[in-house]
Length: 110
Image 1: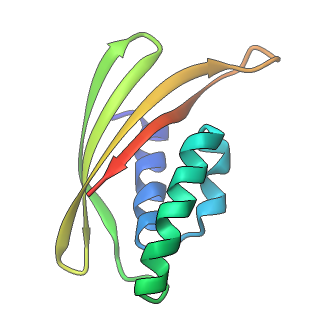
Image 2: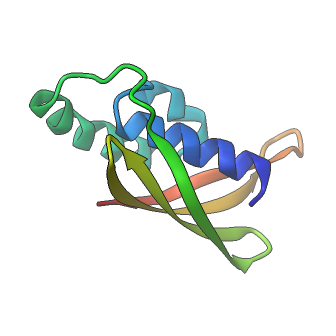
Image 3: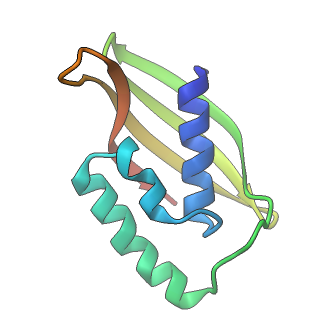
């Protein structure tokens, strides 16, 4: 798996478990995906207090390249002995300076 994708997936794992604030994902997600993530996490954090360094980690990820500018990643994270699935769609975007970066355009987790 590419290093930026691995960093993104680990950061997302930490957000989903409350170890990292959701605002740190802003640059890596489209606004609608980020807003959906933030609103879904509000309910989770009300039910359970924010965790601090509980050792959440991404244990596997499988990348499927749809085309040169689109990939889908299915991952499994482990947090406090329980597994959860994460699926994301990443698209390669080019900014006004010609630099490219991957951005999350779809996210599901269970």
